[in-house]
Every structure is written in structure tokens, then in C-alpha cells.
Image (cartoon, rainbow, N blue to C red; front, side, top):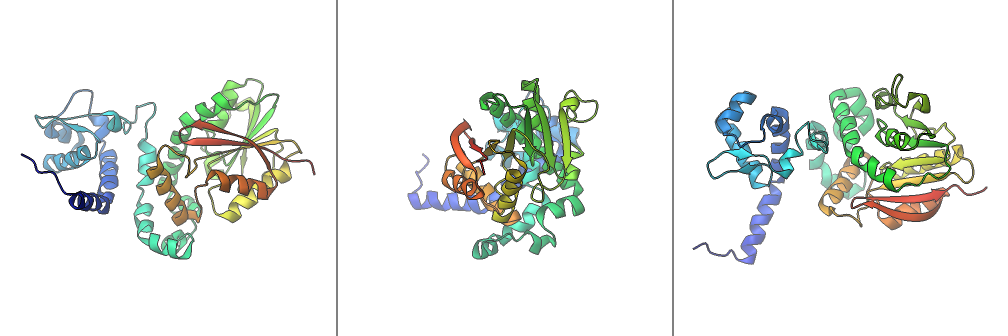
Length: 344
């Protein structure tokens, strides 16, 4: 008979698991870089078969798979074979809702170097990224870590795919003729809106290296090229387009100065009455608080930013001069704040 652990023992086991939490992230990253999720098919496989297919050591692979299975990633069969489950299938590159790039981005080498500095970031309330890497986050990615920058861009596109569909389902563009996707990454949101609204024209604004790799549908020869304009630059310095609707998704979580400058640039470019639609994950209204609070701390480390609460975002928008109206829950993770640029 298995004895029931005392509450203190349960707490102790849980704390040990948390203290070794980095193992889970490292294990998922290792499985992706070894190609395990794609190599494992629809039928259970032995570690030896998988090892031969991926050219790795079979005994070490079994240890990795066993560790991941203990966290609900892959399933170990009674006969020692391993099979996919709902979580591990999301790591495959051919899964429509794949989280492959999101997972790789969250475990990039630079993350392992900044997390140990979290105590300093909390003590001083600022980013420590430049202390570790000698440059600010985005400067470092694009100048010193181009492969990581590509993973970051792919992760943003991957995480935006379903969100773009969800936003398009609820965003009423009314009589809008033009929309600007401010800091819109590779343009998944803009492309989705153009696909849904045949008379709409759009602008994609982001850093030059990001815009250069934008969604093929927006570039020359693409399905929406005649209705899309790509604008390369830093939205914290300028938003050089006039539009009926400005979309700002997961951008106002930078440091306060960047948020202030971005909103000021939008208001400066916009006509009175233009809509500014802000879309964010909220740290206080979320179905996944462990993820959202982790992202909140990572933002502190990287850029000195923070995930917003409903009240803090309304406050930031009001401080910039926007008049916030309806707030809509798009899905369990995203909220949309619809605001307007007031008459002067």
C-alpha cells in the first residue's frame, strides 16, 4: 500500500519540482532541436527506433523522453514505447496551431543568461538585459543574434495566427478605409484583416529587418500587395501614416517611455476621430496566469516593461490623450480596448 504524503512533504516535493523547473524548458528545447516531435509519427515508437531516426544516443534519448513524459509532454506506454499526446503534437512543425517557434523563442540562449539576474531587476525595477549583453534587447537581437531574431519573428507570427483570426471575428471596421498595424511584426494581423475586408487598405509599420521578412501576401507579387504599404522604421520615433484605424497589439508592454512615445506618435499622425484599437494580454484577467506572470517578469528583464492590468492600460491610454470606450474579451488570453483620438 502506498502511504499518503503529509502536507509538508507534498509542499517539499512541489518546491523541488519548481527549483528544477529549468529542466523542463531545457528538455522541450532539446527535443525540438533534435527533431523528436517531427520524427515521432502517429504510432508509438521505442527509444531505439527514434534514436536511430534522429541520430542520437538511445539511452540518453529515453531519459529525455521519460523526463518530458513526467510533465505531460509525450506519453510513455507500459511497454516502454513513447507516443504523442495533445501537448507534444503542438511541438510538431506541421501542426496548424504549432507552438514550435514560440517554445524555441522562450528558451533561446539569451534567456538563460538574464533569468539569474531577476533579483537585480526586481531590486532596481529595471531591465538588466544590457548589463548582461552590452546592448538593449532589440539592438542585440538584430545585431548580434540574427538567428535568434528570426526565431523571435517566427514566434510572434506563430502566436499571432490564431489571435488575428479571433480579432478579425470581433473587430468591426465599419466604414474604415485604411488601417495601420503599428509594430505589427510580419503582418499576420494586417493580412488577415485585408483578407476579410476586400475594400480595406493597410499599412504595416515595424523595424526594417522585420518588415523585410513580412508576410508574403503583403509584399510585391502577393495577394494583398496592391492594398498594403510596408513602412520600415521605429514606431517609438515616428508613425508616419494617417489611417482611420490604428491597431496596436502586444506593444504597450514596453517600458513606460516607449509606450508614451508610441501613443504620442500615433495621436500626432491621426486625424481627430480616428480609432486606436489596443489589444493586450492582461495579467489580472487571464486563463493562464502562470504564463502571463512569467511573461510579465521576462518583460521586466528584457525591456523594463510589464504586462498590463485592465486599469493600468486604460490609465496609460488616457494619459496619452485617448478616450477609451468599449473593452472586449477577444479570447481567454486577449482583450481589445477601443479608443478614439479626441478633437483638439
